[in-house]
Length: 254
Image 1 (cartoon, helix red, strand yellow):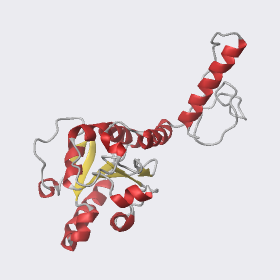
Image 2 (cartoon, rainbow, N blue to C red; image 1 turned 90 degrees about the vertical axis):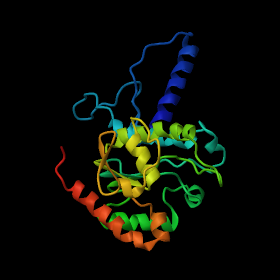
Image 3 (cartoon, rainbow, N blue to C red; image 1 turned 60 degrees about the vertical axis):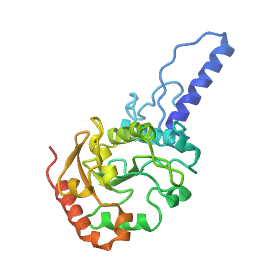
């Protein structure tokens, strides 16, 4: 059970107890739960066993990203939710160096319930490994649109905006040092977060080779692994992009 679900259940139990005790709400200290098993707090913040003082709340970023994943999986805000098997929240390290983002899931991702599944995912893993980046260790991989569109369906602006709030919250929770966009569409959307959207979609060639800003985070655009699988000549420019990202990560933090 997630922290959010535990807190909701605790609230319902408190209301029931107050009703049975006389019908009036009784004041209580706030009980904070985490997603990890912990001793019962009995209406109080858990105490440090050695000092007897109230322990601090769990790290906000960790709690938010797990709650956000639950929200994404349960989302039915737009028509895309009617055709998917499952909404795909991002996955990876809780304190990533890099957030990697592509436009939307593919059929294999939707079937397996895994971000970047199959051969495309295996190629992405090899691309990242080449510069010392790994799933679950120092990367977070996500999609701008969380649901697989039905065959032939062009994702419209309203559907994209439904998911954009999730993406902004992922960035806010994770605070990566850099963002790597896979594909021109993902690059343009990430570049436009928090500002005006591009009137026309720029090409990768217009966006590659330099860093942009995504909500104040350095953003680099490269080719999507699926494109590289179709055209192996793209391996050389992708490797150049990855080396550029590696050099950026090696710079001192501002």
